[in-house]
Image 1 (tube, rainbow, N blue to C red):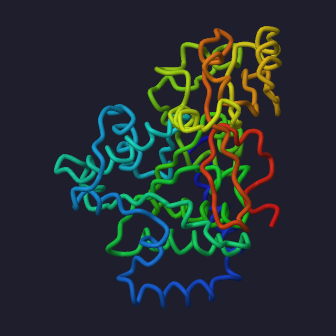
Image 2 (image 1 turned 180 degrees about the vertical axis):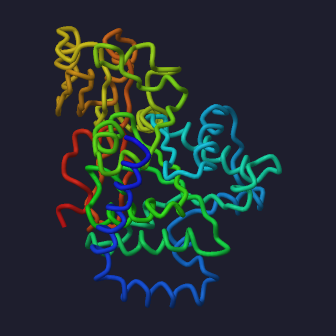
Image 3 (image 1 turned 120 degrees about the horizontal axis):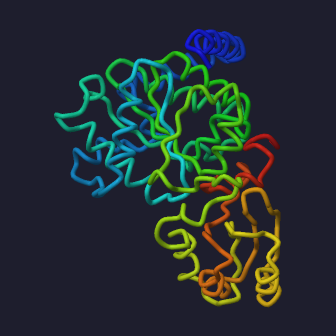
Length: 348
């Protein structure tokens, strides 16, 4: 996409999004102004996000190590004058945490780019943002408040957005996606997204209306990169074959028969050996994507050790499906989003 095409596209997105959101403008302005009179201009940020810079100033920010290449690229993109925002692509949630902490430290140092030195890093709190939300419009209004405060004078916030697919792309609720796209199109909001590899490919990169706003920063530069056959290469997975959250869930299980939903990345979804293993442990198959070697399963935790030892599997991670908002809680998602075809809030 040429610079001229990108500019025309962004202008059209801004126009459309402003028209769509104008009906709620008066309600938003009244609520926004009232809140900020009593909370120093950061009511929504304080309520729906965590101030990582404040944690650093208080000596409470967890230590971070490694991922220098990813942080360097993020800083380069945030410093640029264009509208492109960095998005971490990978399924290692611990790595995303480390990068968020490392970025916060880097931006607070005297060596950070002058354009970013005064900016604070806020990490959206998805639990708080979705708590007791019953409609897509209500969620969009909260998001709009956060975005408005992020660019307000004196705040200069950089938003670290986990589960980017809930805010942009084919999976996101349209009203929320419009607010998010309009904010990005102004060039004033600075965002660092985080998303699983499959979710990025299928929801963000595949959506021509939002893809120009983002550039992928691959975690580790080798995480979940497809080989020339379209499958995930066995060389792409660094370290353990089991995600930290899945291992923790298994370790805390009360019985080997306790069940858990898992995403398996395998060499061959039709493998006879894999089928026999599934049969032996009573593993239920949800859906499979032969093209990328991915299967969603419901399995007893007692099967993990043999699956981990098997040459048939490359990587295993939790399949965390988003819960309906009526229960007042949202769980983080992973590459499993590929299987959950209905968008968040779309059923309300």
